[in-house]
Length: 135
Image (tube, rainbow, N blue to C red):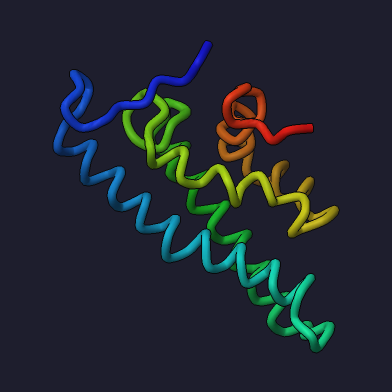
């Protein structure tokens, strides 16, 4: 079943929705994006390799962000970050989440086992034809 996205001006849109979505989108742009991106940079592209302290720091931040998402998903209890449907808050995390195995290697499996709500949520996107990466 395709995910439904709630947008401003539609029936499901509410002010508490806006607040929750804004807070989670802030986590994505200030946490997930920079930390996942820096892990990629220091692991694969930086001319001085390896800078172990930077790689370890950003790996720890990836684990922390995944843990925050897992906790929030567990507390919300709907399987989605905000409300009971897929929203732009959920979708904002998809591009970097799809890179988890690439960035974390074998540790990605341990992360997915440790954070089951995150793993179930992420799995919805992996199975969705409009979101999953081309294989």
